[in-house]
Length: 199
Image (cartoon, rainbow, N blue to C red; front, side, top):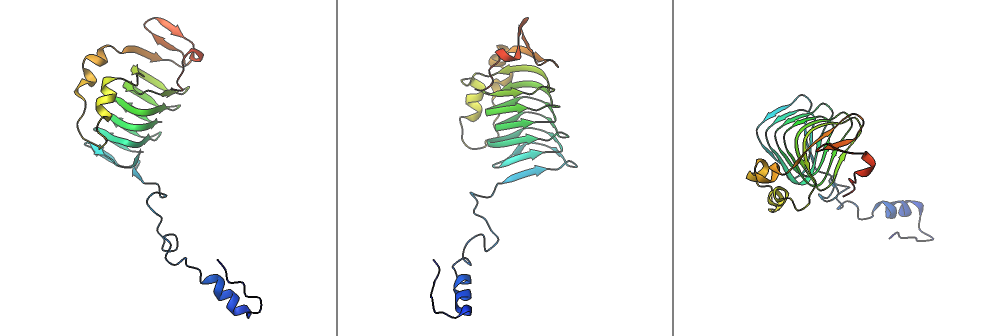
């Protein structure tokens, strides 16, 4: 790797150390390979989007979006001041802001403290943190028909499953989470220690 000549003059040793083959490396050119550089789209806090968003990279929403967000192979993050009115289809979802719509998540949905969500959440793994507010229904069945049809195509298609408001959503149980983090389902009360959200 280095030329360690014992009797070489000092300037030769210096030039040998510097002349390694780093000029052709991506880091020396100021570029990182795509696999090591995270790719994130950001909708800023002063931005409003009306329409559907299809993303092939992680998406952070700090502004307002009215429309469907499709990010099936990546993570959607809604910031504390962010607002989404519409459906979200994502591999992983983090909500800290406000959502009025349906959330369909392939892997894990996390509703953080301070978040407000109204709608249906379909995800095999769901975390509702203390201090979050949720009104709607939850389906954590990994074999859910809506989940299967939404993610059966590996590409980000704009087709929305028509069964979201159909028969499978009629079978969902109405769930309310209050400030004490208990979950009430059809007049049966479960302490939060009885709810396993580890998937």
